[in-house]
Image (tube, rainbow, N blue to C red; front, top):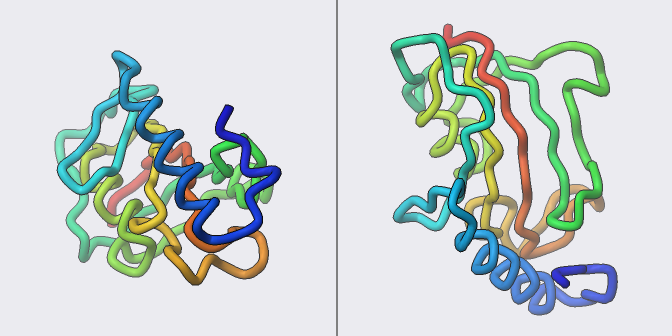
Length: 140
């Protein structure tokens, strides 16, 4: 229903993402933040502290299009990755701050909190909404 297989323009990508997120928001296990970021708690965390935007975090993650096409995965590479939380897309910065160590969330990120009209490297089209499963392993 929300296939971008025929989406050929940034405007069509944006419309597909908006439609997907509107439908997704109706699901009982989906939380939508004030910024439009949606998330689902897959595994509650065992930690007691959430990271700040200025913290470095270690995560495992899987990134897909709204159709489920994988474009990036630390699981596929066989090792988690670490980065300063304020150096990634806004959807990640906002979402990971909701987590504690040991948590696994699924984020549904509108295009304006992802890569926006520029897209990313050929693998993420302009104005694409994205889905990430993120496991927060450690806050440094």
